[in-house]
Image (cartoon, rainbow, N blue to C red):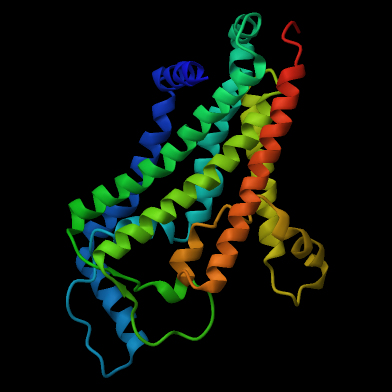
Length: 310
C-alpha cells in the first residue's frame, strides 16, 4: 500500500499542472497584501478609526495595528473568502480528483494498472490518500505563504481584530478591540487553515467519486464543481431572512449541504472556542467526515465494478 501511495505521489507532483494551483494561490495572496502595503498609512488610519469608534471617543489607539498575522487573517475574512474556498480551492481539488481516475482512463494507463496486481481497492485507497494529501497541502501552502508575505511586509506584532464587526454580521458594535498576542494568533490562524484543508478534502472526495464512473477528467471536475456551485447557491438562498417565506424550503435543507459546513474554519476565528463554538465546529467536522466517507464508499464500490474494457 505504501508503495502505491509513493507511486501516486510521484505521478501527481511530477505533473507541471499540479503547481499551477499553488502559483494561483500565491498570486491571490500578493494581490491582496501588496495593495495594503502600498497604502499602508491609509489602511492603518482606517483601522485606527475603526478601533476608536468601537472603544468610544475617550480612547486613543496607539501602538502597531498592522502586523504579520494580519495578512493570513485577511485571507480568511474578506468579502470574497467564500469564493476562494468554495470555488477556487474546490476547483483545484476537483481538477486533481477528477483526473486521478478519469484522467488515467482517458489516457489508457488505467487499463494497464488494473489488469495486474495490486487489487483494485488498494489502487483506489492509494489515490484517495494522495488526493487528500494534495488537498491538505493546498490549504497549508495558502496559510504559510500568507504568513511569509505578512511578516515580510509588516513585521512582527499582535493580531488586532479591527474589522471584527463587519466579519460577524449585523448587530451592536462591541466595545473594545480584541487583541491576540502573536503566538496565540499564529496558533489560532494555523488551526483555521488546517480546518480549511478538511473542507478541501471533502471537495476532493466528491470529485474522486465522480471520477470513478466517468471517462474524461474535465467531465468529472466540471460535474463536481457544478455540484458545489449549486450547493452554494442553495445555501445562499437558505440564509435569507425568515421574512421571505417562499425560501423556507431552502432554509430547511441548508444545514445538510456540503458547502454549508465547508466554512467551519471561520468558527474559531469569529466566535472563539467557547462551548457553542465547539459544538458547531464538531458538528460541521462530523458532517464533512460523513460526506468524505460516503463519497469514498461510493467511489470504491463503483471503481471495483468498473468495466475497464469499455
